[in-house]
Amino acid sequence: MTDPTRDLSAETIRGLLADTSPYLSCDDCFATIDVYIERRIADPQYEDAAMKAHLAGCGACAEEAETLQEFLGQDAG
Image (spheres, rainbow, N blue to C red):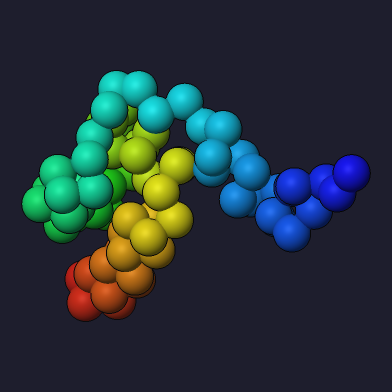
């Protein structure tokens, strides 16, 4: 029998198994991600449990957050 996880990276598996509660949809994430990143830049201790859980389990939104942070971080610098 073939291992169904053999082509998945450890990061992908962690994302699939991540606890996503409290739940936040991708639409909700994209609607507020700019505010979240601005707050994280202003205060690295700022936490949003729903956003943190969503970004841990959603590669597309996590990539958007990283790109936005790089852009805003450079802009603010």
